[in-house]
Length: 470
Image (cartoon, rainbow, N blue to C red; front, side):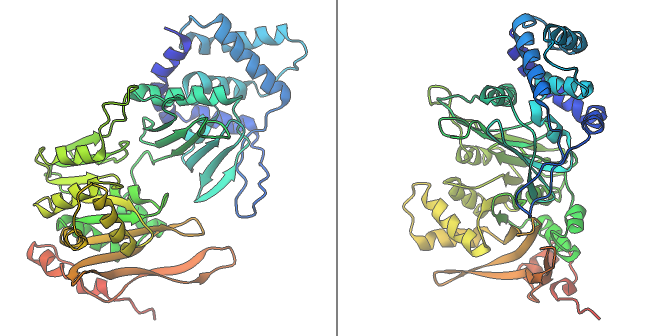
């Protein structure tokens, strides 16, 4: 087995081990002295990463060339344990390179390349980093606290980025090459990975990794972050327990999947839950969960399994709850039909800018199923299926807020009637650019309130009225 193949087979296991061991990360932080990177935009905070010298970079390149040429037949573990002698031998053979002071950091970076995910491994191990973006070999961005910062991390060349990509997709049975230049995948911890390579990506292989917390966020975390209020949390919890059909809508990166995960945590442990996703990301704690994942076409362009295929199949699996990671096409019709035929309590997400836009998009996606249905029939399906739309937004200051909790009241004539139950009211922006506002009830009690009461789920009517500050 070649060195690359052995690395691929061990990469996921090693990543998991490194997640539970904080020592490598601490060594990097202690040794690197953390040099701030100057960022031209005043809105971004400096991201602290080591700035390598020319000798340091040259030595690293020589080490990798030596390993590939001379130690290719050895196990990865043997190479890692022998790094000290390898580095010493190369320094002795190349007198023009000065002795490297950051010996531990050099070893750590080489270990990351051999057993982890290369230069971006420290970012993946850093819990404060929520997103990593590789725009070709010479530009890596990271997100902290909702703000993007340029880092000093660089890959050697395009081949180096491709090697890291191979480590990510190979254990999942996915591939990325010129014939299939785009891929959606995931890391072992559930982090979402999207990659696109030349000739489609002009700047070089581009990787976007959206990380997920090792411990899934709870509703209390969302309240603490200011994503929603305690009253809204109580209302959402009651809505899931009452088996309302709920749709979470919002823009890219607004936190839809996190909110969906929190909503799913309120589902009874007695229910049989079927989750359907492009790349499995949901982290449900219930006992009876069946996770389904789509499959891309093979090298011959055959064998693809879409979300729509999985939704149709899930209906034969006797689900109590169906949870769809994202609705973006013809599967919307199958989802609405499932919600209308006894599968109450289904949850899903979709992209939109507002609850009204989400309804319009659902109509469009139903038409994508290829059924020539009249618009009124589609709207009847939407109005009959959905009970609640939760709109989530990423505001300009980087915070993620639930901006609307909207009831789908039904159809009047040809118009679907929507009514906000809770709404975010912005009152201004402070001197630091932080948005000032609060989430307030609109004072309107939803039509399904009596349905909740009849099922023994009691909510105080006071949560639907705004508190007056004295």
